[in-house]
Image (cartoon, rainbow, N blue to C red; front, side):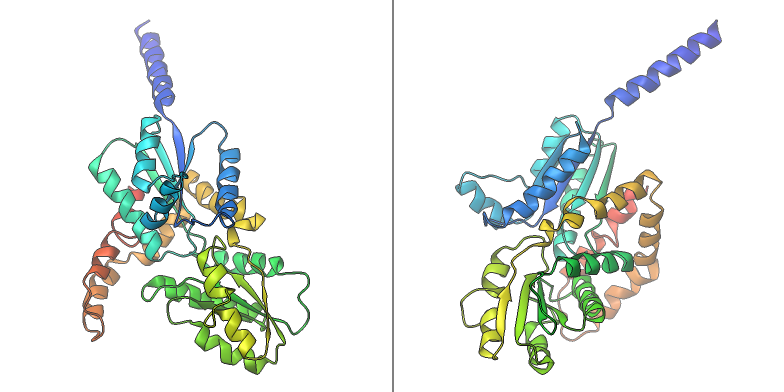
Amino acid sequence: MKKCFVMVLLCCLLVAGTAFAKTGTLLVAFGTSMDSARPAIDDIEKAYKKAAGNEPVLLAFTSDIIRNKLAKEGKPVLSVNAAMNELAAQGVTDLKIQSLHIAPAEEYNQLERMVVKNITKKPGVFKTFKVGYPLLVSEKDLDAVVKVVLASLPKDRKPGDAVVLMGHGNDRGPGDLTLAATAAAFHKADPHVWLATVEGSNSFDNVLPKLKASGAKRVWLQPFMIVAGDHANNDLAGPEEDSWASRIKAAGMTPMPNLKGLGQLKRIQDGSFAKEFMDDQAAGAPKFKELQEEYSHPHLETVGPKLRAMFSWNNQTDADADMAESFNGKIARTQVQ
């Protein structure tokens, strides 16, 4: 009789524990204030909500400037901190945070710091939390994205037409290296396709001479960003003389803008890439742990700051502070505990 009572009590405790567990998802993008670009993000949010069923899904923008502008227009979007607090208020105990960034660069690192800050201030609110990878973190991701983007190019493209993709880029950090590898992968898959960035080492100045030498008469222009926002409409295809379209026209070629963000591509929009992360977490995170081991080697974390300190052009101390809170540091170690 006593044994049966203990078993019943155990079952009740297990059921009670299950009842209090609630999963929620937070999608995080840099953001956009352009109405024409917003559907790319909204469609991703709709796809996640459909897949989540009754589980809450919220959207947050990391850009203070964009959020403030949208708030003045009566179209508020939550910050990461506010969204996490809202999900906690809704009773979420197991939080999944999915980055809508392209690469593990500055904006993704900022997201990680925001998450760590919230968790540190309110320990125990979430039983578990996981931060999903950006779009490009592995060679497999790179190959898949190249195929998806090439398949999305306009059907009106003729043999010999060139394509220039505009990425954002960073002046320093792994994002620049990721996009350099992406540019090489695109050009290998199609020698008439180039990827250049607004910031960083892979600028349009490097690509324009190659375009001229290719003999292309027409150049298709497409953003390699989640949304076709300000950069796409102005820096890429705008009428100003320093836009990429104007410079291509001045070089004797015809610019052909195709302002479609990556978020509008079905294979990326429907969460297929993020699903891989969720499946990995459900299986005990073997891929995540493998990546953490690869990129968080203790010798790299020790030697990296010392090596960078020897660079004459690098007098900034915030880079190493960022790294301590980034994928290579605190949050990666927290996630697998």
